[in-house]
Length: 203
Length: 206
Image (cartoon, rainbow over all chains, first blue to last red; front, side):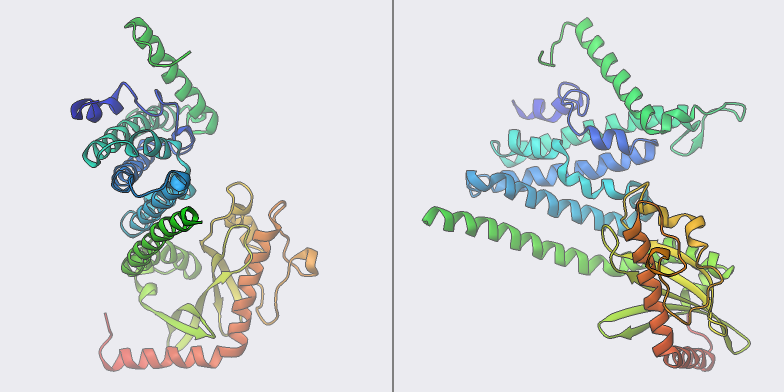
């Protein structure tokens, strides 16, 4: 992959979580509102860019046998930094996201990109890959969060979008709503891809 | 053998660099995090306990060191008399870490005004139920002259079903406050007097 492809592949071709079908746990758990989805996406993007950078820098130093352990140490360090920074600068958001911020450590997307991309590619490509996949993830989470918030609460980023007479569809902000929303989006994307004759998902 | 030494060395180096970076970030951000917690968590908790605006209450803060632990204490003063104390304590033994609570009480009678949760990391739906008012209201009106205990341990606090550890951590934190009041009451009151006297002479600190 060249630089331009690397920079854009996360936005449609490998769009997480829909294409990669990784990182579903935060995608389901924190997307009750658009703001939470966006916050989670940005935190993951930050961790992805820098974990890819450090792992790519260290790829010739880290012995194969302890590579996963080393990746996890790097990722966990970055996640704790994000957690502390969030508490220091965006306290209410960090309260809302709660346990899901530390859980970024075990987000499969991050370890997946480290193993599949950063450990084999030079630093600038790895950082571009992190940015691209991270932005894709933020977009998807914001989209899922927006749909759930608009239908479930009747607001978007806290602003009312429906008149008062609208009865919010409370089901959408609860756990089953997350599954429903994610599943329908996944189905729509696959139908669209098939319509265009693209087959990204292996059968 | 050489290979193992190499593995250990690399992994050890990565870990120590990470630890160093974390220590640096943590120490440099700690004051800001403390400020944010004061503003977003302790402030509202104090407001509920004392029914006064948080802005005034947060400035009335002192720290009481006991052994190797520091207890943040907030106070309310009216006509030269301390009418409210809010003591923060970290209850040990929660299911996943300490449960930090703040107990508001009237030092004249030792009657509890209420208990608030400052921070916890208990399981949502189970241990996190310690936040529920229906559980916390068991504290309201108690007189803190003797240690509390869960009903199952022969005391008067009903634990949350399925969350005995979390409930016990709350009781443990409360008992720290009981101990603190028993052993250090005069010290706390004189610290407050001292601070108020200083504030009065210097025309009130910001």
